[in-house]
Amino acid sequence: MNKTEHQKEEFKETRRGTVHFILVHSYLIFLFAVILGVLFDTFLTEKIFSHGVYRITGFVMLIISSIIIYWAQSVSANYKERMEKSESRSHFEFGPYRYLRSPTHFGLFIMTLGLGLIINSLFSVIFTIVAYLITKLFFLKKEEMLLEKKYGETYINYKKKVKNWI
Image (cartoon, rainbow, N blue to C red; front, top):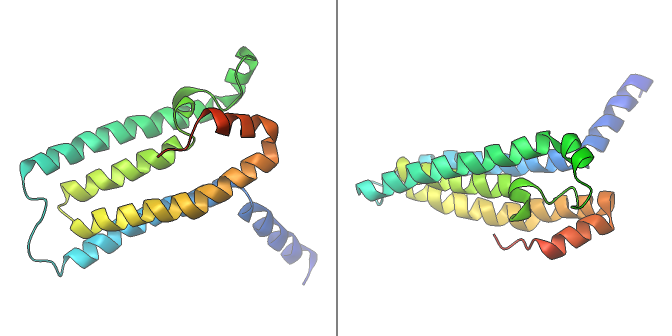
């Protein structure tokens, strides 16, 4: 293996251990849940969510989840500005992160559930719930381990303040 190939392998290995790498893969699971659900629903002739209330609920869920995701991402993007202005809070206690440790993950869960209701896909709803449990148990657990390793006591104190109840 030459030097360039070794550097590429080293870069890939380093990237695998980052929070963003873990989150991207957990978010992809939601996409696959919806796609797999739609495929399974082609064999289901009876529509479960045919009442209009389900569609309205789905649209409301899409709107609320989009707001949560946008809020979480905009807070994350302005991280350095916030830290310069506020020394009284840990750098995790801003925006939706005051209430949820993984607001983007929660927003994506609500969004895909809402989409499942809108498209009248029972299996998308079921697979979305399964995807949520898988990502919460495996991916978010690993993300939190990395954040504890990176930020130490600051993140541990944040975890004590903000419970991951969702």
